[in-house]
Image (cartoon, rainbow, N blue to C red; front, side, top):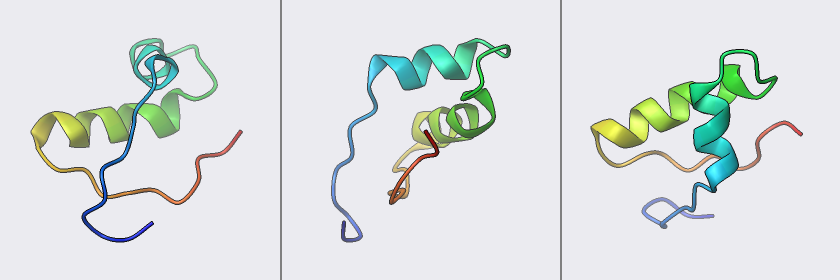
Length: 48
């Protein structure tokens, strides 16, 4: 992935960002908040 490429956030990422009990919350919340403020830097891979 190169700088400036568009990235896709699926519904699971948004759900994880909202649910603090979700194991993905620690990674998802900062990404969703960054996207709300404007362009979000691409992330090569999220933890599974």
